[in-house]
Length: 228
Image 1 (cartoon, rainbow, N blue to C red):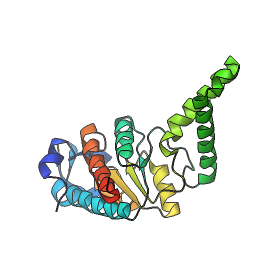
Image 2 (image 1 turned 90 degrees about the vertical axis):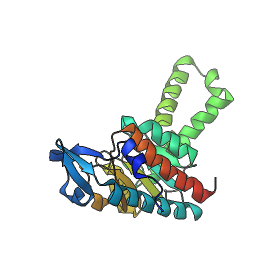
Image 3 (image 1 turned 90 degrees about the horizontal axis):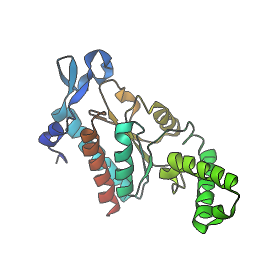
Image 4 (image 1 turned 60 degrees about the vertical axis):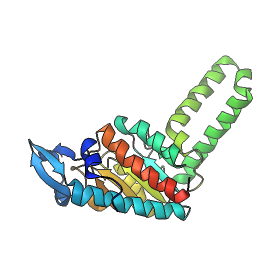
């Protein structure tokens, strides 16, 4: 059973791809037609089916207790990524992907520990007791760490599945997942390479409504699997 209707997908503008000259020929099977120089994604035979496949895979993985990381650092995606991942008890990166975030996890984990230490200092009031200049420097450091690592603060081990918005922008994250053998589910537009991910979801990766609809469904799948 499809988990989303064609009407929902159309209403959210999921079908609008990029300009036809910006396409990746490997996306040909996922394209329905071209209109006014814009590729139109095949919603019925591709997006709806692949979204359902991703939903079932995620639900099954969640029921086995697996952990998920959402990645999307483009402006349109950042807020939705944080909102949907928090809703389904998952982790997220929505500001900037730090190179080695997964492949150099030991180093990243030490920065996460630093973030937690500074948060403890802030909560206990210890920062207030320090000289103004020192306290100001530590607050700036805390703010920066929170911005980049806040979404993975409680991620103690590498994620089991990574959900990505915009393959072109997050190619470093995808390469790290490939290197570590972590399955990826990716919302990809007509300029992407579907061969690089486990489950591609061909869709408009620029429109907020499109991202909200698809990420919302993937988050629903995790909630269903976790039974929350």
